[in-house]
Image (cartoon, rainbow, N blue to C red; front, side, top):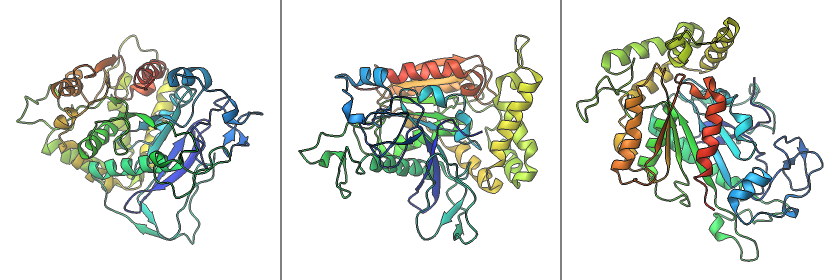
Length: 422
């Protein structure tokens, strides 16, 4: 089932791979000051964006003095973004229970990272391909030219894809609209002509789930975490969901079984995981099912108080195994596991200078709470004392955004409210 009221698009990574994304606001010539009258966006309006009902031109609406009150009173615009990064063998569909609530008053974007969902592992040759607004991608025409792309199975490559995504989103905010007639050659918001009001800065709070958190830590290591106005790192805060900064056990930093991954933590267990994933999608069902049993708290650690019906169990199983089966190459996933498992992000956590929220599941089959809490401890060790972070432990498992969606949505909205500038 597609995300509600989602706008589908693509962007080219720096190596030519085409990455799929979904946006809660339309991506055709967005006006950064655009504020819809409703989160339901249905037709082309006078601003060149999709609006709802008989919506007035966005700039005819008086904006509040405080950006925080503007967001709470009037709705989402293109200045404040919640960015959703899914986990291993997942996709943007993971956030079906979060999308509608988070997008009521914020711009929300989720991607299918390369090798996952609709992004695939094929590189287009020739002209850039994009998807129509509101329409999910379909299979390419027979005459479409592709190159098979087998590289890119490194967390660092995914971090560069994230960098390319941010550049893409920033460029969209600069395209001309009837209410924002910017020259197409304008490179950055700081270069705006004096006759036009300056664009508000793009503030972003990313939510990295599982390997999505590892991508963010790698991004911080590559591009820094110093300023929300930085073109390289425009993050105002970070949410890390059920991921410790190192999966392997290590001789360094007292990193033993109490902090490492519960099932994939050394050479032998990593090779076993690679063997399980290194198969065609049609032959990986047992692997996909094992992931479900590991990541849903009520399956990994059932309790007498659980009220999950048999139908819910079947529906959850079908949903998550189907998404894992959409990953085109099991070999590529297996190679990514090898890179991800050995990647030590602990020092990168010490570079974080913005507010941090760590969410973890008490019944996660992946990580212990102690291992995840290391993110906050490391941030404080690096000097992030005032904003060093907070932790929130859920009663569910690795996919806590699914099992406890209402609580997850509420805590995300509360956290980002404190991250935005006034």
